[in-house]
Length: 141
Image (tube, rainbow, N blue to C red; front, side, top):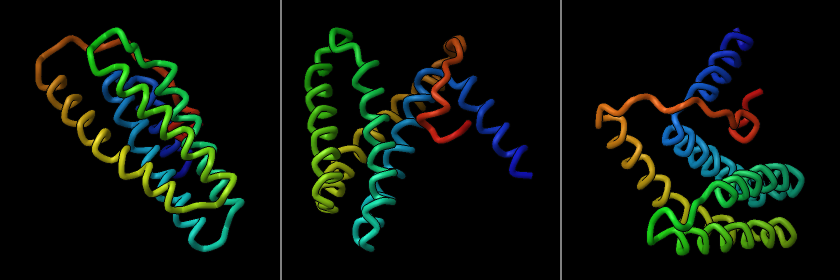
């Protein structure tokens, strides 16, 4: 049964539109931040490190794919991504759960905004976008 679930997840991600993929990345980023905070609060620095490293990978992907020239807020969003990445790196070395929670406080409203934008695009009767693959960042094989 788990093989079927894994295959479904892989197929879902592989055929996701760019807007849907972005929301999936944000959802996974929030999950990683939640898990890292819980691990740090329980004294599990190793577990927290795993989740923080994955969160950092996602933020690096968001940075790499952001076209700052596409809209006037691009540079500000890039600055936020840079701040989040720096805070996650610092949290990983210091074990500071409050820094991770601060990142979650910044990421959560962004995730909500991207979900709203993706929903608006989905309802606009636009042709399907080309599939993209980011299965590793989303935690599926």
